[in-house]
Length: 230
Ligand code: URA
Image 1 (cartoon, rainbow, N blue to C red):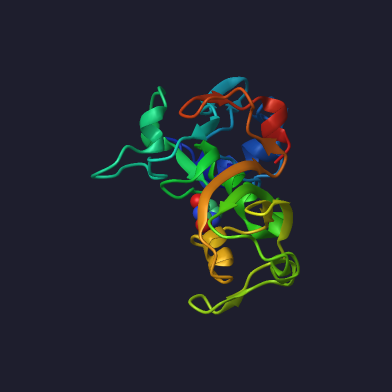
Image 2 (image 1 turned 135 degrees about the vertical axis):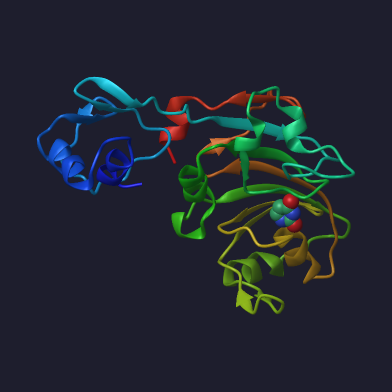
């Protein structure tokens, strides 16, 4: 919400008064004087007028979870355990998943209450790669390297996938970096070559790398240095 509208929405404040208060330098957002009433404020911001708190600012929360196989990337599910069941945190209904993983996919999952931040992490325009370790049933055709880099046509969505980087690690193992997150994308890309993905593990999202010592089902908060990278 715009800062001047936020102030005008408080009891006994008019729009005109709100604009004047901001313009006269009496309003601080996160400890900084702000004179531009059009600036956006969020639920995470601390807003004060003459040193008196108007909005305390909710803490933004960010977690890295090692998703195990056999749980759903959803906030609720009638049948299966969800990734949120693994978190021992208050107000879990405020959290969402930044880039889901399939039921049996393991690895890095980011959970947060900050929608703008999670959009920056997941939207293709940010150009942040998501890297997967892939194991397949059949040998990986070396032609996949070039075809994945060119992009594959997905008829259902009527689009061509963005260039993806495939590094062959063995006859049935590879590391794949995508720059978008289409439904079952990795499985569909290998399916295009009649090859079935038997194990899929996300190692990395942009600069965020799953900790080696974070066991499946465990999680930790991201550091402020990590959240600032997105
Ligand atoms: N691609 C898939 O097919 N599954 C995932 O869980 C993630 C990417």
